[in-house]
Amino acid sequence: MLRAPKLTIAIVAVLAVIATITLLGGFADVPQEKLPRVTLGEPYAGNEATVTVERAYLSPTRPSAPGNDDPLPAGEGKQFLIVETRIENTTTSPSYVYGDIVRVLIDDVLDPATEPNATLDLRTGSQLGLLQPALTLDVDFLWEIDETAATAGDDVIVGILDRVPVANDPVFGDSAFTRPSPVARILTTIEETP
Image (tube, rainbow, N blue to C red; front, side, top):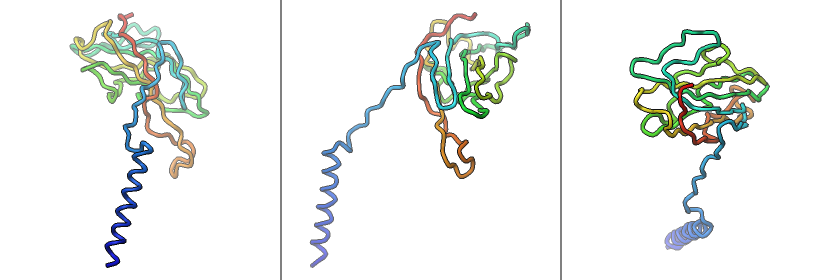
């Protein structure tokens, strides 16, 4: 006989908690915030680097180092979408940025999960290695796409990603970072091949 009142009290208590949460808006839809917009040429200061996206354009060849008159062509029926950036490592230690700092979205062509085919250091024309502290580099991010997939004048969204430092990581100590996530976007159009 004592069980029924305890069960009733427990059910009433749970319903009271649910009602309180509902009244305080705990079950309301969480509004999705849009990423902040930056413009071409406007620096975005993140946790690891300051990134400035200069432009996006298409090219039948890969950018090469100054003085190299023999750039590599895209594959048969392909072209490169190139996003020109300037990146400065603002930390006190070398950093690998690779394809984790810039991504693009072109409807039905590229989605933000697609890593670039190459990340080039324009001083050497080679794959970007470690980005040294306080060093600013011109870096091109390249995606090889079908030559009919995009043309100059098409819209493109360039996303800037960032990682957050993790304190007291059991493996890496204070030099660990979270996985990259989008922090800013640039709405622009693809320019003519320079």
